[in-house]
Length: 454
Image (cartoon, rainbow, N blue to C red; front, side, top):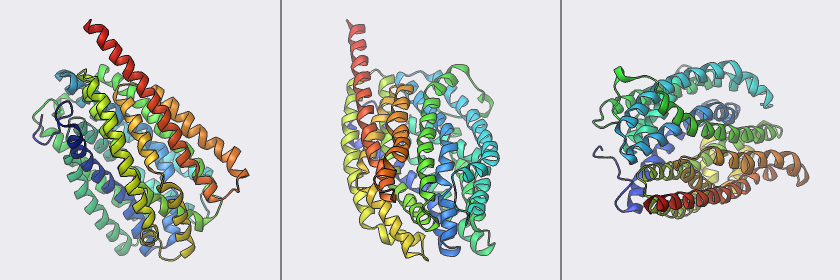
């Protein structure tokens, strides 16, 4: 265990959760700044059409990338459970399997993005005013998939070991480089959306180099050695068992968002620009909620590995209260500051800003429901179950939103508000269902543990 690694299986729980979560929140906020800087720079120097062009790609990028991000989630859970159980060889084999899988995933994503993304943008009814800009942005962005996957897998391993400060430092430096390159490429070289996409890819490369360097300098079983890199069957299957359902869940989640995006595009370029900027701001609240997901998942993983189910129950209670309070505070803060924040993105359309405020009003105030959903899902996944939470999410979020668009939305006004109110409703449904799954799983684990002790 490294000096800065946080103890998950012993010690005071709330202080450790806070110390663990805060760096993840800051890391997530910095990672979001990659895309936010893209939108702000093109908004200031290129206009609202460029903002809409970049914003219109977010659902598509998430749709394609999330499947492979799920594999990094699987790697983190497997490492956390191995650490909790003290299985040293299992830790090492998982680490040295994860990194080749990251490179292969990045390569596949690059090919998929370059070949399929332009066509999907057309299917999404991306406004003709800037579809060519969206296509250009996507093509350049997907050229940076290998370093992005390497960073995500490496960061997942470090967090599973209790180190959340390292990824924060690496992304801080990469974020500064990203902003500087954004301004350079757009203002000096007049590259528009291609420049901000290239800046993001180059900054991700820097983050990947730093996270690999950190793994190679560790002195515990998470140490990365080039000569030991190979794909081991057992940890690969474990990663796939947890990661593939997590990835499918994320991708299907994005499918519903793509449908929402496509429906929103039908309102025209001004609405799309305003909602794209609002979505970027909303994303800052989401990464705060998602940080508690990662905390709950890794704390649960280590304690499940150690067989400490009483502490798992404490993790659940503490995480739910923490994320609810945090979600209420952050959601209200963003809502209060909606107009000045949107003005950073959009400088040439008061109407677009008005639509951005509308989106933030509908989604941010109840955002704590998203936090409850994230924590409950993280707890279930940390216990090693992945298929069931995926199925629940498909039904309570993805299928629900699709049904909403086709069966409810047209009959309650067909307005942007009617479209986006489906988000908080689906969060609440999913949170309730995931909590029930957790309660059933923890009861079974406790029963099995008592039976073995008798």
